[in-house]
Image (cartoon, rainbow, N blue to C red; front, top):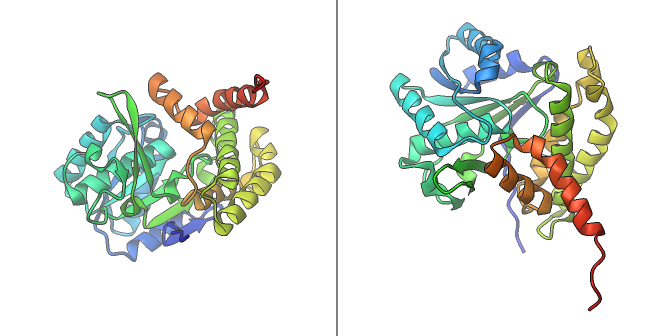
Length: 298
């Protein structure tokens, strides 16, 4: 039985690596970026920081801050219109899983045409998406590194899974300096998200030796590094390893299928319109009760 492993060809990690990443972006020869992010990061000036770094490398940019938690078909459609209006030749996703997924949908439709719903399923696209650089600001879903794109269909009230080799970003960026201002609760929720993904991958029937190694390493790193961020560390050294364990589960998830907790939280988040990481603790408790419930005799 064969398996295929998908991750970005370039993955830049480490505290203070953002300027290095922007320099690497210049090497691709891109002219104008569509920065896909959410309203909060734009308001906090994080998008403006990226724009200033791009401008220093003579790369123009425009910000689309319409990525909502659990991005929708409408969000993708609006972002695509913005990209076409400003004639951008590549996309930068800035944020967590919602921004990354929204950007993937925009980039995929930009090169393949049609609506994002046309690509629900596995490998439905024909052409590679518009080049996508994923700059991460959380440490949970690791959507910046995967070939998964989850978009909410408002009409059907479901989350569509677009699993496509063509949505894998060309570059992922994990700079802990972008994560220091995260709220305490979000830090804890995303850490549990990453841990749950790692455990699910390890017990998956579709696991491989590569994904097993990544899953085990993720659990080890999360266990070793979750306490300092939870205590709201004030120096970057104490959290400098935090993005790395969130990325390890992404490497393991390129092959194994979703398990119970992830499926549950995805459905719950879609129906309640809440961030998926925040739904994970509830789903883990539900899963525990389900597993501990005595079964009736046969």
